[in-house]
Length: 352
Image (cartoon, rainbow, N blue to C red; front, side, top):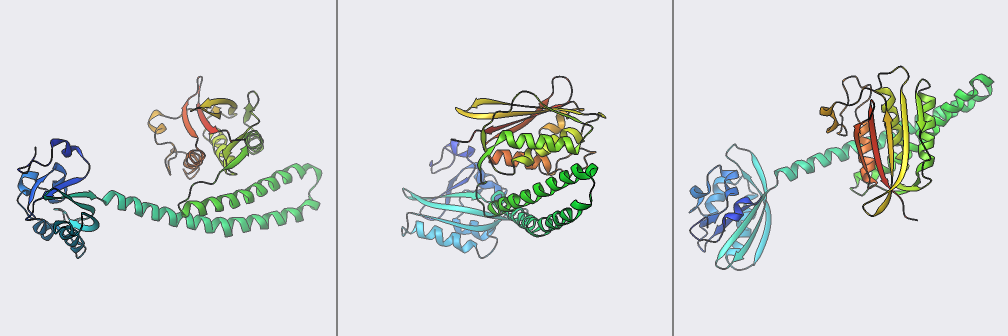
């Protein structure tokens, strides 16, 4: 037992919330070890203090009156339990938002206090993320899409003036523009869903088609590199969306851009397997580059992570991780057997 009332056991010291026990006079007669986080005092020195004195001493502002009212409602017997949020001020002068639940326990009032500082920080981070997504959404909706439509129009004008030798190059540019327009539409819709706090929209996407298109695109973009597909890619639909192309676009591009060879080689293979009692496709993207240092591997998929000499924004692999996770899949990295790196992407097969 931790206090004179003998209500709490030592088990309660290990809980994440602060527990207070007040007697019929409002005096603190028992508490767990977490009650000292705001006051900075050991539990033993706080015993004997009344609920009112605690709020007078550590209350940050007028919100503390909510705690007084909630406590009195339970102490008087008007309510069996109550819950309220208000703000305290700790020994360092910092405002601490708390969630407190009051309840009767025989002749005692038990208060369970939860520090909401981390929760509020996560809420602020989500608000910042929502604002950033909204900005991205506007850029995708207006600037990039409109510019690509202008480029597509000029490509049509250029068509009759390009000789046979440049026709293939013009067709490649036209394909890239069309793909960018399609991606901005999908990314815009995805941003709107994420801003509203919804789940990532998914649909059946034919994996072999997407993978084949991205391999061909990478070959055209990096003619000095060898991009090879080993074996047959399973002709199945996976749980994804149109942004699946960005997953492989980033992985294939990174395998070449970060390669230290004059003529990089990237090998892709895909197999159908069973994972967690459900069918899934496992795709490997292996390169023969310098590999990724062990110190970087754990943070590789973090937002803004990139190598010292990376020409990109550091968002590519973060996007890959977020997309694949949203599909219910997984992506991880490991060393290649000979030299380089292997990215492994696992994506569930869509239901028939």
